[in-house]
Length: 147
Image 1 (cartoon, rainbow, N blue to C red):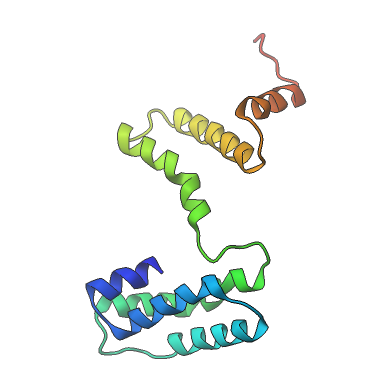
Image 2 (image 1 turned 180 degrees about the vertical axis):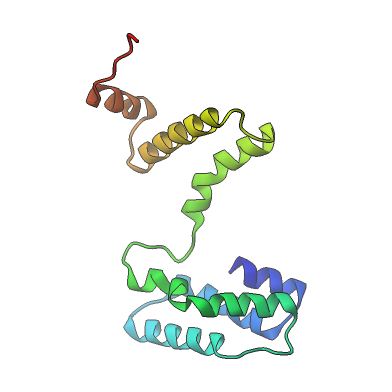
């Protein structure tokens, strides 16, 4: 949807506008009949070759044609949302830290940060307090802190 929105404003192609409208419908699907129509519309959107389209629009279309089923995973798999907002929220802290620090030094620090961040994000998704999550990890593992 983000790519279609950007192309709609940047290259102003009708196809990008139609793709953006189709993506918006994903949030409002209700019932098997609407889902079938939604998938049929996906196939119609990916059918043209758009030889006269601007380069970025044509590139997006060709990329989407390679794996059309990936556009509609949320229709086939229960519990998968139609957007990737949760994934983007999960990597936001790492991205912000990288932007502020310019990069991680050394690699061990980056790996440690990723492990800690993953622990806290998983705890939040499971409605656990951070301290409880850390305590569970320490108590369930035979850690030797004397070395």
